[in-house]
Image 1 (cartoon, rainbow, N blue to C red):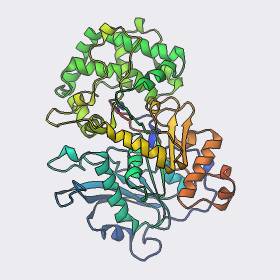
Image 2 (image 1 turned 90 degrees about the horizontal axis):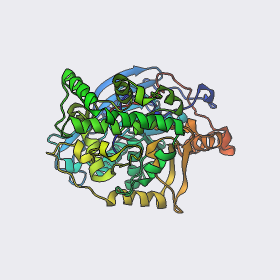
Image 3 (image 1 turned 90 degrees about the vertical axis):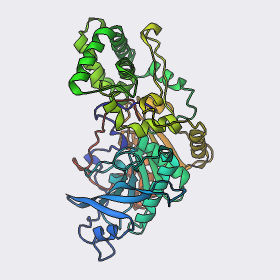
Image 4 (image 1 turned 120 degrees about the horizontal axis):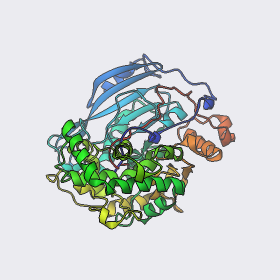
Length: 483
């Protein structure tokens, strides 16, 4: 997967939920602010009693305890004696009598209290993990061969094992986009750890060299009018390559940006422009087409620049823009795969590089070799072994073109699509029948389904009331095409 894009918009992705209308239908237990439910020891003391756990800080939040922690992990789970590193995690503590949701976005972890959709649905605790090799959770020196999906699943397994003694009720894994992939891979390697998995907008690039599903998506998504507007701006940005690259050079100089990793400003410029249409559909809605210049040919250079910059982000493929995401691009180029699409609306002479491979976004000092069997293994396992798993996709999200699917071996598992939604698709955005079923299954897997829901899934509602600060659904929209 390649780009995820620039600001933070509707990747409501790892979450989302509903309106206040879905307020609790059952009494919500009070948060344990002092001692852990079921014991007389303060929850902070219990967490810090875990071998390898240390406190970075505690932040107050009404009704919860929120801890930012470090946990000592082996660099290599196959050879634990060969070095360790500190992995950052957070704990949003509600009470040890509540279920726990294990969340990862697949990138850095936020140190601001927040609650993901399954956490709100079950009114539980939330443990969030920073993915290995995203700073500061990176071994020093960094042996990049130890960055793979099995090692990351090992990180989650050790965290779960350590915390299960404190949070003894049921656990669910969740995440959106790369986090949804991460939750799925964790389930593949440790299927007995979690009681359920809720994976949002998780791409599944089984055959890296076959990407026709994306081409079919872009040929039909939205309306013809919207597609034509976007295609015209993208083409026009390449037609005006000369003056706009001159503007790009001034922009880079003013901001201290360099282009060593990708190999030059020209390559970076084309990468940003070719991300434009993908980026729009990943983060925007059909109604946002009104913000796209209606007649690209008559638009000024500044209007073309502004439209591309607002969606793709001209800082994306600078050395400074790529550096934070080196671990992602490394994984895309070694295991996860990355999409390549065609541009039938653009003359071949205008495109010099096409969608560039992840290798171009990782410093050459880091060796990379693609492993084609890894995603095939996960895909096969999900088809034949998925149990208590829910996959949610957005109808207008490009990443859903290659998705997880269920086979005859799946049990109590579901794949739902939220109509009209993008990379921020969530349970709350599903059609009413599927929304109720998904909510009911999540409550049941967590062991907190009220009797009324057990008798009638259509009665399912999140157990926790919506909190405007805790349940923020905007997602980081960043420069570059990443899930």
